[in-house]
Length: 266
Image 1 (cartoon, one colour):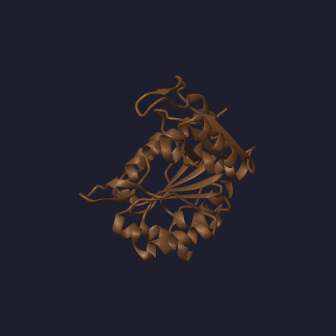
Image 2 (image 1 turned 90 degrees about the horizontal axis):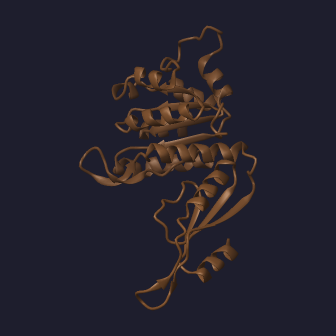
Image 3 (image 1 turned 180 degrees about the vertical axis):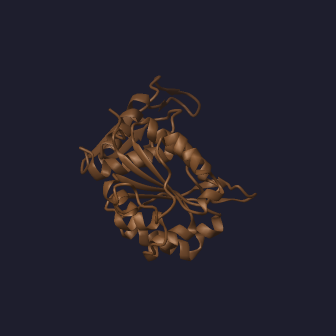
């Protein structure tokens, strides 16, 4: 059973060109069985329409803090109480600053303050804005309060600039959400799981080596599953063509002796 099945996820979308990636994330969460309530800021609606998220999640998109639901329960209080996790992606510099200051002037920020669910924040912005001391101080403040703030990726931005500020891909965000839920309520939380994967290479000379055909797929899948169930995971891997799972400690080795040393050190 998927660890996201039946979970209630509040997905906050802020005003960034990277919002287009979050449409895929909303779809992936829904297909995994999660109930996704999307909150869009006023700025987010300038980049993507609410109809997109409503079509992908099958649920109404929330934008107005003053719109009372039929049951009369105040929106941000109800959302915050029912959420299993709150995810903000993309999170702009403005949203980070308001959250760090405890400002509640829209539906998203009031929901964050009202919830006791784990909070995942994925910033996306111009690299200079992200590297600014004010933004870094806000990120540090949010982390100190228990929020999980994912580092943006390095690469080409929407404008012709390279730097750290890109929103991670939807698959990576999905993995981070699974890991967050696992750490908060998974059956393996508090456990440390060490997984070895991939074949080793024993050198014969500077060119040749003895190896095997292990792909590492089983070990990588086990590491991801243990992470989703709440374990702290160390994945020790020989050379493979696979990308390491998100939210695990990855140790690359080549020889059997290196793998043994890494296992003993873990």
